[in-house]
Length: 304
Ligand code: PSU
Ligand code: MN
Image (spheres, protein in one colour):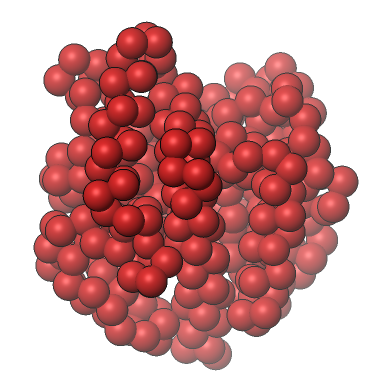
């Protein structure tokens, strides 16, 4: 089998216990070493504290792994040959026996296929600000239009064109709700300033939306739960805007394109904010992982 579900995750799914999927691109390509490994372990511990089983997802030696042991997690964090895999890269990576970290699109695909209902990440990919020239739009959006999974995120990355990304999510039929907020979160920032049509306030609220979706049937599409980073832990908005403008100029000057754009900008912000953007990013991810565990628990509670 090209897909391997860890024993712990398999048992939890079989017994109807809550499981939370975690992506690995943030570990391999979104966070600086060596801190990334500590974060990967911390996120798994947060899922467990919330009463769910963590399923970190990655491809190792041509096998899509759902639920990683310590050795696998360490490889994802430390091995520089670990690539970045979107969902379109999964089949060639498996065929070639390659190793790679999975983005939101690849993780959501594998999680959904394995029957994991809830997934936590930092910020989704989306429509880039230079879309008119580059047509760069993350494959995350396209996949979320077809995978019936609940994704807890701090909105979409603020390096993107947020209004355009929200428009695209609407076109694709992806449900978007704000968690305790009337505005869509802004990744490093608590608010993007854009309004959301629906607001939920508790994990049980989200579980009710999930169950309503199950009962409706019809075409599958993701439920995006936008969970803001607490205002006290957000990046200073003026600093954010200033450094991001310089980062976007650097992308143009250096001619960076394709998969490299997002990791470059995340690292640029970390360096040029003296690590403040990294702390905001981590605060957002931790909050999302905690909430995802509570949502998974509430959903499974209602199933019994
Ligand atoms: N959230 C973070 N850091 C990240 C990502 C999300 O806090 O690095 C990753 C996710 O894996 C997402 C990817 O799918 O960035 C988007 O990359 P691209 O824009 O190239 O599609
Ligand atoms: Mn892209």
